[in-house]
Image 1 (cartoon, rainbow, N blue to C red):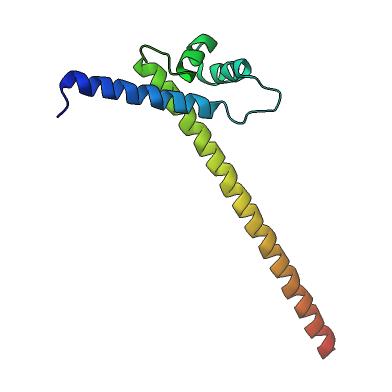
Image 2 (cartoon, rainbow, N blue to C red):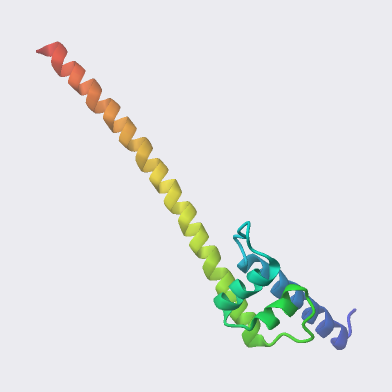
Length: 119
């Protein structure tokens, strides 16, 4: 069984790993010309954290992570994830609309052929 201190260390390590993972995901998409320093600046602009702080979180070197920092990182990461999901949903809907338009065009064409046969 973990002692209270051990639990705190495990929790702190989990928070550090979560922050590192989310910080790196906030840097996506990575463009061909972007170096690591540019990625830190990109994440810095998204989160409001300094580029230096982003760097320490990026490499997992932060000694402490403040609750408000992790909350900002989580919020931005979740918001960007929701935007990406919305984009995917929009693509799916557009694809479905295109397929329905094709089916409708075929039905209209068939109706036109039937009307010409009866005339």
